[in-house]
Length: 145
Image (cartoon, rainbow, N blue to C red; front, side):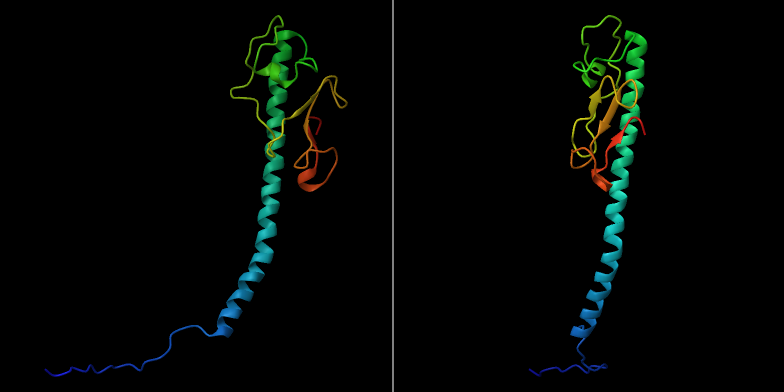
């Protein structure tokens, strides 16, 4: 039996990447990441703050509907929960929210004050750190804004 040899029409070459080429790609990817990643997290922060503002507006709308039915806002002790469950007051015609009472985007309960410091009532969140004051994600967001 004869051994058959094939005639290759192209030269055998190494088709891999050199270390220098790999390093160049890594530097370019690192440069792109240093620009793109902070922008991404900045957009996430803004989206969470806008969500909190929207939810607070929704809660204030529900509070105003409660006030129209009952004659006053829920007391401090009744709180936001009075929008979902009857606190035993005359005129209650809820629930005033289509879904459960939301938590803020950082998974904290919204704060409620009656009487409020900025209006008849205040609904607010302390932001990500859940402490008064702060900037960026830790910024307080309230119904008075």
